[in-house]
Amino acid sequence: KAGVTQTPRYLIKTRGQQVTLSCSPISGHRSVSWYQQTPGQGLQFLFEYFSETQRNKGNFPGRFSGRQFSNSRSEMNVSTLELGDSALYLCASSFLSVEETQYFGPGTRLLVL
Amino acid sequence: EDQVTQSPEALRLQEGESSSLNCSYTVSGLRGLFWYRQDPGKGPEFLFTLYSAGEEKEKERLKATLTKKESFLHITAPKPEDSATYLCAVRLNTGFQKLVFGTGTRLLVSP
Image 1 (cartoon, each protein chain N blue to C red):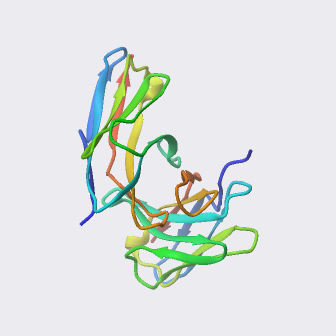
Image 2 (cartoon, each protein chain N blue to C red):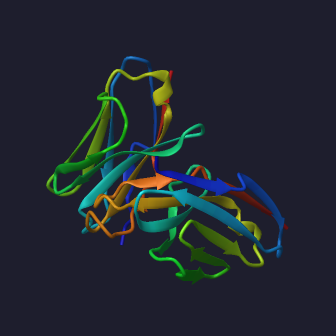
């Protein structure tokens, strides 16, 4: 079974721009969660989507948003990029929304200049 | 506030030298403790899930244990390929999939 895939793998943007990252979960998985990983803060939860609905959101500003499609694929968007948004963005999927192990993708490395 | 603390931050071992990594947590309600391994430039790779105090799981040279306040990842006779960052995470009793992560232990095993 193919794992979680994320595109693109690397991205360079400048301040003020916006970016969209994509995540395809493991086949059959319906829950997709997004995390931001930085050297200073570690892994921090952004949001979770299940059946096209956002179920939970972390403590991030409204510039961070996401959505999920009917085929469970998910996208996250960051508008008005700041230097501090440079990070590894990780997507994780699970079969259901609770009591399930999350499996992570390889991440998208975003550099904001 | 829900908090997960891992120690040590970094650990250097000789091949074959067994040791343990610690993950202590202060959370309002626990619905699972997870161990992941992360190699540089890659996403976390799932290792174990523990749900209740006294539970133990094993995989090759790794063994994870859980008490009411902490978890240990025991590494027996490590090999250089065990070098990685080991992450501990807890899922809270909120009914959602949010994981709260510790900052990890960077393990280096020298031949």
